[in-house]
Image (cartoon, rainbow, N blue to C red):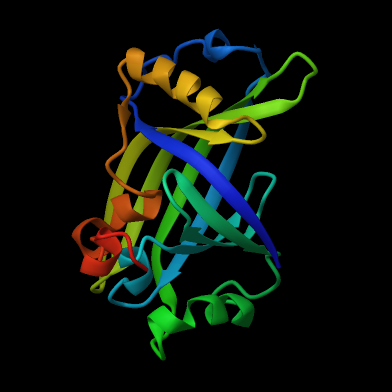
Length: 210
């Protein structure tokens, strides 16, 4: 099991709207890489994790396929806990269940949503070719699996994630996106967008407490 600190910002983008040249924020831009990502999200039937701004998924595709648990860690930041895919597809690994036991108690973790994402990703590089940040242009098809019904939604969003750059660099990149007409996403995650009202934060979470 490995842990990472993830610092990113999300923006909504209309289909077909071109993104600005991110090299204007400094450095060069890598070639675009397209990936097909398929994820199943797990939660309690009443979305206790989502209401605490926590996501737990099993994802295939891309260069980080596996189990991902994301926990709030401050402004624009989350702690991501990763495990390999393994053989089980419908059972959450015990190590990740222990991470969220205080929130879910004895409630079972079940699939509550699936997402398919077509991702076009570019990296922003410094003069030595080191990756400072990544920009992911995502077209997302999500299905909510709750209350015995399947609700489907489709949207486009852009994620900017720091790799080794600092927040001033993140400000510069996201400033260019805002200037081009992109708007910061009101959803804390793709899952929260799919779940809608049932993922609204608890009162303690909304005030900043876990």
